[in-house]
Image (cartoon, rainbow, N blue to C red; front, side):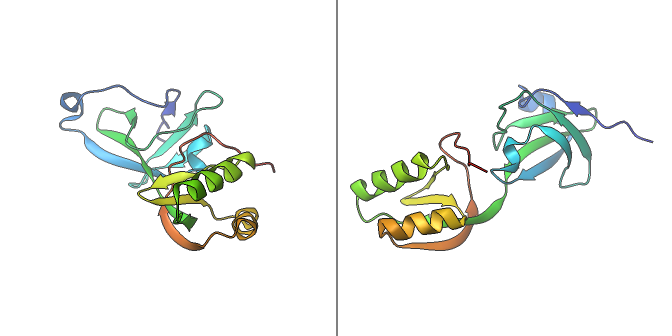
Length: 150
């Protein structure tokens, strides 16, 4: 029976020299999953970790989460379903971002596109605003720490 490492810090500050010779593993999570700080997870290579992170922690893609004697684990953002708006103007972009945030949802920037969670409430909002949108798969890294009313 192997011991499952318990992770209590969301970011191990380490150097590339310290990671040299260790196997790189990944923990691929959606934006929502990166907010869940207390649970068991499996890495891309099947290693288990127990997360016991401080309340309010949001894991950041690219950060090293864990360093063990033989491997280390890096956080990666998963591709997920999103609604994509390509605003026709700066004013439209600001209006969409404001309205999405006003409903306590997160928004992400992807070049000239705004990404919002694939949710029926967002579909209805974008329809009311009269903006064109499409459903797509993309990495969703919110620019704020929004939350949904559930």
